[in-house]
Length: 454
Image 1 (cartoon, rainbow, N blue to C red):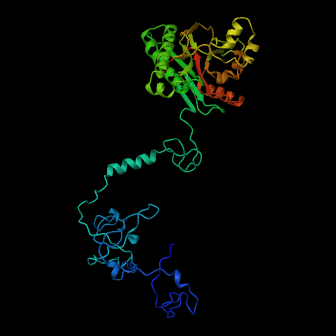
Image 2 (image 1 turned 90 degrees about the vertical axis):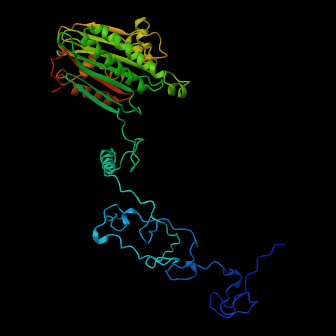
């Protein structure tokens, strides 16, 4: 059977130093259990911790201690602690004053000395030549790092922590607002505002606003608003690509004399191509094989000194609101939606159709899996000044009829379009903000160059 290993005989009690007999198992004075005492090591003496010379000073004994300064300021010494270097920093990172600078280096010990006479910590690391001196820091790199730290984003919640690359505060963990959660832009007399709303986790709307000059020098302003289809893949990318493509196409065509209505048609086609291209990207095919292709709706408006042109695909809308509120407002677009089809077919009136849960099912959109593209365009020549409101259903859900929209538009919208757009977004948020909200406001006729929000 197994046996416990025999312990070596002890000459005295480890607890009270009472002399012992060779066969004692317990101390006769204090009762100490002698069987629990391990045999003393024969060839591995305890290492000294007080700097005294002894058997622990055998060179090479024990493992090296990384980070301990070498006595001669060699490679093991941190750069800030070397003789002649600048003072180091304290535990908080603040520079040490000359009065609190690190102590002078310890004089070199004789070979084989086991410990530093000052610290009492054993240092068994063999001396090494200073073959790899640390290079002085590049001041340009330090300056770049300082500038990057200054430009780092600060948390909007705690106002103290830095925001990491994933958009979260390193201090409190608060998720930061995305760049597109709330966007405002003004371009001369036209302005737009887009907001995430109160229920969605991101903003899937996008817009483009700009001003241009026609070949005869007369002014023109334009706005494009796109609403990403939430059931599709990457709806936010789709709306952004479409708005940029359409806005760029209009800015390229109008100064060259293209009729605004034709320019609007071509802009919608260009937006469609941009959205289709998203579905052709390799990453999109690999990660979204069983999902719908990126998709969005679009509505745009171009206003000149005597002409108003709108174009659309989907259920984003454009409204006409005259400055004289005694004159009737009008809705300028017709939705590509289930509700609009029911009304057009005479199967339901408008109130019944839009009260149905299928009302917002769209029948037209931009995207690779859309039906045949049919851009809608229309041109008008208003006989009085007013404003054009271009928006997503995030707004018109709370101001559906032309009369309701006119009541929500501020009276000074023509001279303060950015303010008017903010008010309309606020109207949607006050109503519940169930969807992303995007609205652009364009005055008619287009003001001359230099005009803008007051």
